[in-house]
Image 1 (cartoon, one colour):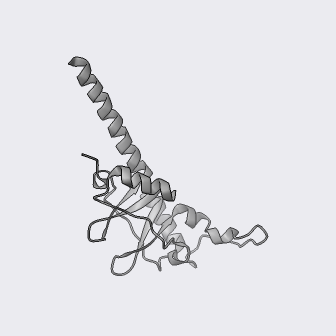
Image 2 (cartoon, rainbow, N blue to C red):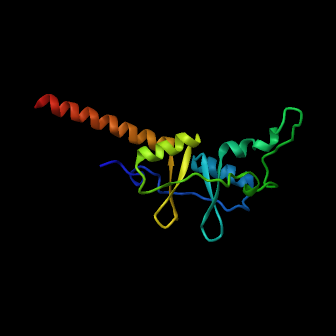
Image 3 (tube, rainbow, N blue to C red):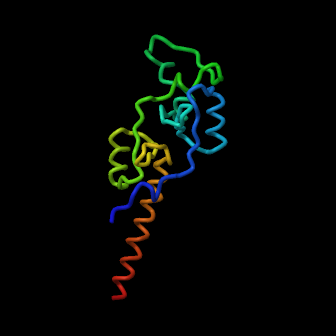
Length: 150
C-alpha cells in the first residue's frame, strides 16, 4: 500500500495572520527553525503562505534592473504585503508520490497539508520527504538481508 502524506507530514503547524509584521514573522520563523509559514485568517482558514525568502527580500524590491527599492525588515510591512496567495497544498490522504509530483511541478520547498474538511493540519517539507526516502532505503536494505537468508 502506498505511503500517505499523513505518515510523514509535520503535524505541528505554526501560523501567522495576514496583519502580522514582517520582522515579527521573521524572528518567529528563526526561533522555531522553520522556513515556511502558512497564513491563516481569523477563522483559521488558509489564505496564504510565506517563506523566509520573501521575508529576507521580497520580489517587488527588484522589480526591474533600473529600479531599486530600499528594503528593511521592519514591522511597517505586513505578511499580507509579501505572502503568496496562490497556495499549493496537499492532502493527508494523498500518496507521497503524488505529493512529490505536486511539489516538483510547482517548484516549492514545502506545502501545507489539508484534511478532508480542508482544515490545515500539517506541513510537508523537503526534509519530511528526505525522511521518507531514508525509511524507504532502510526498508529495501532490510528486505535484501531477509532474501539473503532464505
